[in-house]
Length: 154
Image (tube, rainbow, N blue to C red):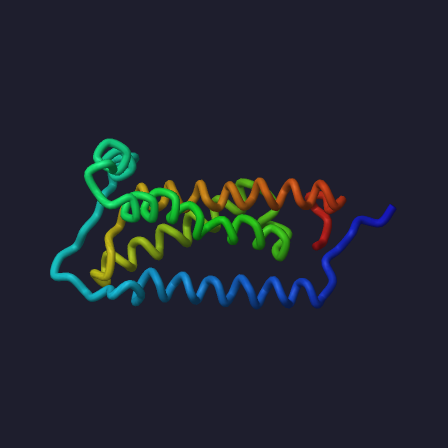
């Protein structure tokens, strides 16, 4: 039995969606939300430090702040884990997707800090990666459910 393969039309649509979404996300990360260059570098390289602070002191701040920072940082990266494995065969593996996305996230975090429009926070990298993994699990279930096996050209 032949394995289902995404049609060219679907592949083109998914490509346009992921490119558009990537551009929107980069806009948010570098220009959106009233971002203006600061005067100093801000960074956190201690894993779980920021996450722990939001959990420990979240009740003292607006829920919007900690919800966006904890859950938003995961949610915005789910589409990458969901769509990239459908478009790029090598990214169907958990390790391949993780290496490519974590590398990309590290570059973006580093650029935010260097341009002083944000901070480098290892916890953002952790949360973004969890979002990618959530998307990958959904994508894997979808591929299994519809008979698209790993290694199949999709």
